[in-house]
Image 1 (cartoon, rainbow, N blue to C red):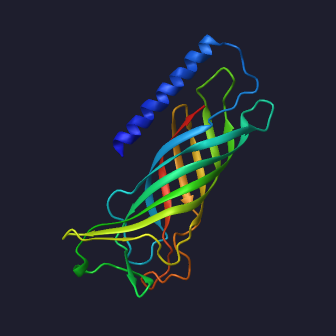
Image 2: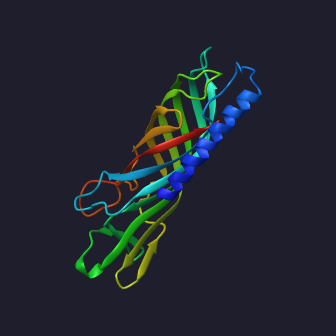
Image 3: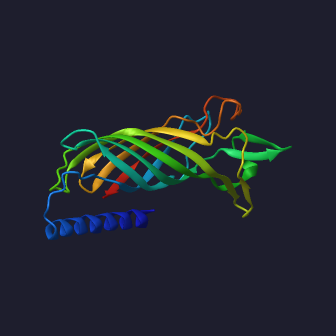
Length: 232
């Protein structure tokens, strides 16, 4: 994950340098410019809405990328609406155990007999980001402050629960009962130039109310904190 983030930073910096070089070669001012139409980022995941006894373990992370069409709504073009299409891949490490018994998914806490070594969810989503965008950009400058707020609507097209015991035994479940494949989260992105902090707060739990998770409340959702890089 660290290597990937480093590569993202280098790629973004190279793209920004190329943009500045093109600007020097073609100094005409574009009065109809748009900003930040490609994004790529990495996040650390915090599991929220946890049922009693469920704890996060190890590193949980995500990678996110996509395209957002920028629609300026004022003459200065520093206020805009953004609508796009993206892809998100995520890993969540935890101690919640899933089992398939008589065709039904059972959710429970681990016991000493499980001998768990690794226990995680993996999911992949196709997402539609919708943003209200404010920035201090101008046609002549590629360094500016930005604050983007909005929502990300997603469809969880792939989900895998995977557990590994100390004896090497692996178990996978790809279609657990009660899975909410439609996801939504509120987002805030703010920063200057290349580095922008990103926060995603999940509004939809992974599992609906029909699922009994360890006999307590909580549907398992996510808070994502990380960096987002934008490319014209």
